[in-house]
Length: 274
Ligand SMILES: NC(=O)c1ccc[n+]([C@@H]2O[C@H](COP(=O)([O-])OP(=O)(O)OC[C@H]3O[C@@H](n4cnc5c(N)ncnc54)[C@H](O)[C@@H]3O)[C@@H](O)[C@H]2O)c1
Image (cartoon, rainbow, N blue to C red):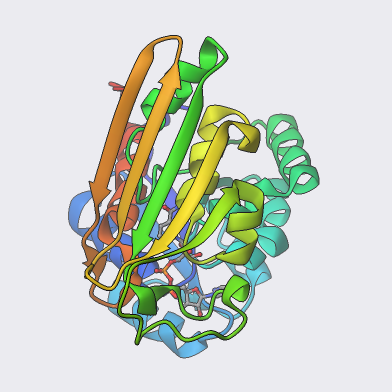
């Protein structure tokens, strides 16, 4: 897609990442994108505030967003929002950017969404998020027989609330503890707000079976650390990320928000790298 026109963007989720993206579009790409509307179903006041600041429309529901005829809808909310809104956006002719990539591990949903995007001649984009190395994953998996192993280390308090922990509090943890070692599907459903990176990595590799996931709570950390080891026909590669958290949400790496702006820039740029 190489539209030269200013594309109309709508945003679902007005938290740390949504706010960063809205401001970034206006500051860095006003000639390429116009933010037309924002939606935050659980926190309408957050949508009102952001819309006021950005001079766009605060929407109360998805229908109101779609009436604005966005060319592209950016999701920065959660998996449930992707499941609820994804197909409706495509049906109305919008392209989709999905940050809560864990939603795409539901095989039936993913297939339906991709088929629909093909039928509507629209695209579903998953930004690289908080992780690097998705270019390696894509290239390595073309030849087959590639594997990746992801170890995610996080400050304990940022993992609290994950369903896998069943209410266990971690903020007083004194020692490093391996909380999870297993499949990406189980890891993402147990820690849906924490390991979208594992879902994005699996999507780039072409299968969740090709990725092994370990989640560690580490009280010595103040930000997230992701380490991926790739092995394949190409050889081996290691990628380590030490992400700085977003000031408004310590669970989230700032790079995830930046990666959405980078993706949007790439969509409009004639030169594509990587
Ligand atoms: N792919 C990645 O690497 C990556 C990295 C960081 C965060 N994420 C994911 O991105 C999402 C946003 O992160 P954040 O830090 O901005 O979170 P946040 O909690 O700061 O903001 C999320 C916002 O979405 C709103 N929301 C929730 N359900 C909604 C719905 N159904 N419709 C509209 N709005 C809804 C919430 O009220 C909140 O304001 C999360 O799902 C997070 O797990 C992905």
